[in-house]
Length: 243
Image (cartoon, rainbow, N blue to C red; front, side, top):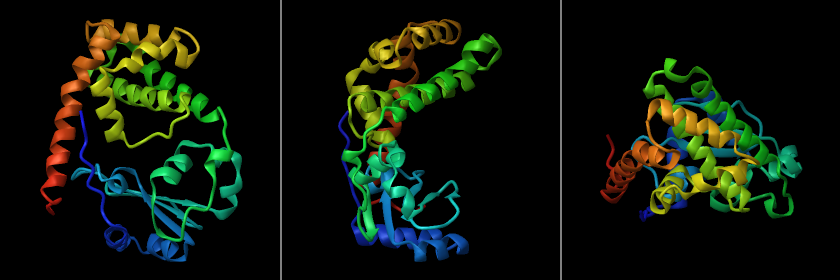
């Protein structure tokens, strides 16, 4: 499905950041001392919904602030030259999609490439699937669905990493997966170096969904994701009314 992007201006994002951190004095002070500040994620891209949190990356010193409405991450200046940071998922996303409301992009991710982000993502996928795989029918289907959804989203991210692409927002990943009919699932063995994860997925699906991997994922998430994406898009197009 096609998303309609409704990005805010830099001034709007700056005002949003100020309002969001106003209730957190420690974070507010740390943010004032930051040399560079970028908004990233769904709000920066203009594919947000009423429940989207505000993702902020600040170059400076401070404690991470993670709430339902805001995710503020501080990165010390010394880290910006480290290869593991430059090659990471977050750094590359911010470098491509981030909107700078203070300072400017201060690192070059294209000159730092590593396979570590892919390995890290593969490990995360296996961890997510291990619990429902090992415990089988003991786990309630509601929780299994959550495990599978997280794993599938990470498979979509791993697919982008494997092809050398920068990972976009979750909304964009979902829209692309729906449009392509979850073709990423056909590439599991190649992406993860064997059929182990595919066999885990088959086992989980046979117990809880009674369908094949691709049919099961489509049944679980196609309508659910599409409904949410359409609802969020309608909210954006209506001018993001305050609730």
